[in-house]
Image (cartoon, rainbow, N blue to C red; front, side):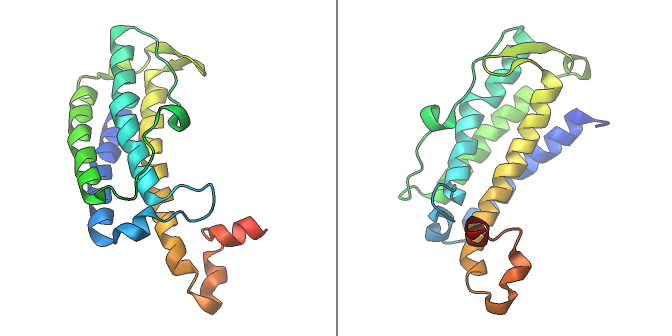
Length: 176
């Protein structure tokens, strides 16, 4: 990627606005609904992004800049369990506030820092450039995952058009 810092920043800046839009547009029950057993709801995705914003990505960037290794993050054991009673709009606003702090940390990274390496407790040696790719991809993945979760309520009612949604139809995939 030509300008990884700018591209990463572009993703990280737009994600909170996408979430605010989702939480403003949809009722809480659509955001809290799991598309299938074992699948994350939109709320689960947002809570996970909040968790990784607090305990993973900015912490790791600081570790790289300070020349330290860092532990793994396991969302199943270290993450916050989603609570359908939470105000999803407030959670999205909280995410936006903590993302602003993370962007300030990202702003301290120079192009020359991208080759820095550290040891990830599970993955071994990783570079700061790889972490930034992971951070941006992680944001996009979980936002798309959340949109797909919300989409399921609509896909179920499409009747003869349902095959057009095959790539996103969680129920059809589980039957295959």
